[in-house]
Image (tube, rainbow, N blue to C red; front, side, top):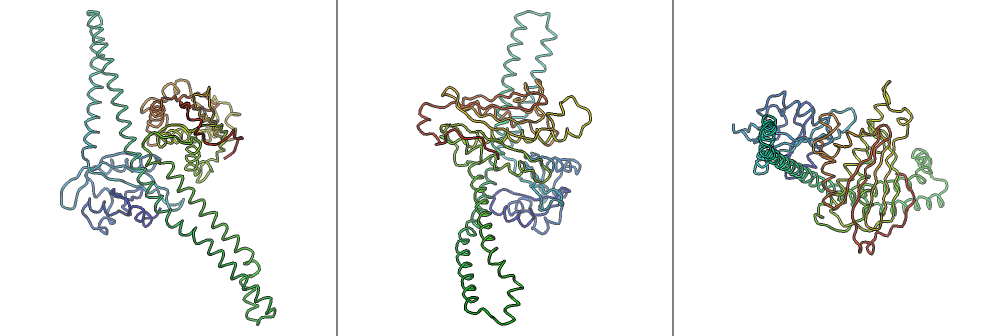
Length: 473
């Protein structure tokens, strides 16, 4: 993305947005960001982010490095030094953007927001969590010190500790929901803006292609009539015919127009997939086609699945059964599919890096298998829809699997994973009165099983799919 493309995109968004280089240079800013800082656009683009904040340069550099390495949003706090001398504390959300070319350095999109009531709630919530954590620690120390004391007193301390632990866990779940809600709000607004901006020009091009094809065919017929009635044109025309390769042009022009049509249809499908995936207008329970949600998610991950920009090519095998429409929150369920599929892709990428190691306990035969993700859907006992997503990556130990759905637990490097994806997915499936399970064996891959309840009247509103054959994506 170039600064010009960024400004065209950011123009429709109300949030203050800055486009930075990996070294902190301010490449572009939209009008809300200019108004927030209080500088002219030219003055702002001549500065670095280090010039605008009060935090130490080393701290800001580490934050930009974390943004450059992570595919997820990286949260932070910046104190802006405004042009009028005042200081303004802002929350920041940084994300890396695909550069305009593979040789270009990383571009970082930075979203700023004045710290208001929501930020205050986050601060108070974190303070409360810290206070409760300290209180639990003090209670546990008191329990050890009074181990020889009255049994009734020990029981009361234990009960109090359990109550505080339950409260802490509940606050942590609330915290993860707040983070996810804010992240999805920003993502949804950006997806809607991008889809809208792309859709208008693509529809204009797509609508004009039939006319272009018709006009071209008319012109070619006219040229053929001229050739029939004037078989011996002047020498200058004959030389021009050879220069433009008229015969080839007549054959290839129709193919070019058809390829343009295929390309615009593909862009329209991507825009539709973006809208369906975010499902911003569907905040209530409704009956949806589960297969459409999976396919839309796969479409958004094509960049990784097709092996572009250094990623390995991953084969996706879909074995869809006959499913009714399932009553759910579509946008939330799509997030579950996205989190699980993204983890599967990461596991297969990690598997490739292990191939270069000389010593390991994992079987070389299992490592050399073609990277695959296998998706199956079926109905069990007429009461449950079961979605299975399996990969043939490295797999996990029993100890890792036992902690997989805990908040903030992650095996990924710093800056790459937050430890919230699977925890939130587990809570979403529980909210749907379903189950999310994981089976994994080290060296043999992992399998996630999503089980969702269906109602008796769902079959009358089925999606029309019979038992589908296995398909490869």
